[in-house]
Image 1 (tube, rainbow, N blue to C red):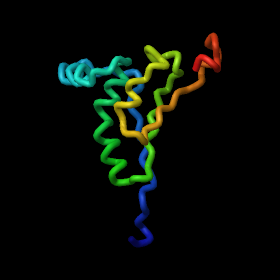
Image 2 (image 1 turned 90 degrees about the vertical axis):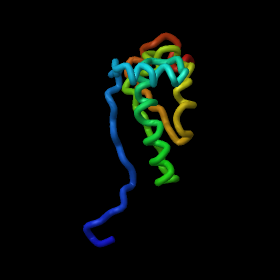
Image 3 (image 1 turned 180 degrees about the vertical axis):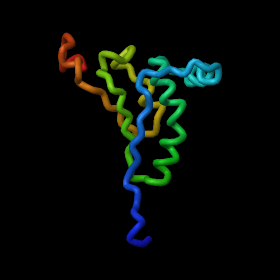
Image 4 (image 1 turned 30 degrees about the horizontal axis):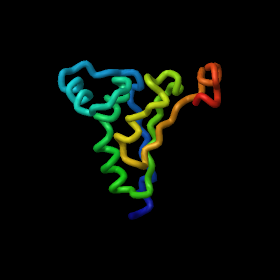
Length: 110
């Protein structure tokens, strides 16, 4: 390494948080997951599981943060989160509290 090079400490990328791929291939891939959750979350799993697993092989001390840009009250079936188990263990799912704090039962319900 010389003074123009540097080690990458992490990568941040974002996906459309409410986009659902309507193609037959994506529809089949979502169905193959066998997970009941929002279709866009299923698309995130399909698109990133292998990428995240490979990234964690290369950077074993890394963590992948998946920001859903919505509160738990906006995720179908929450607090059931089968998508959490479908990703590598070092995946963190981030929810926003925007709007959530106005929901009945906050914070205990969440």
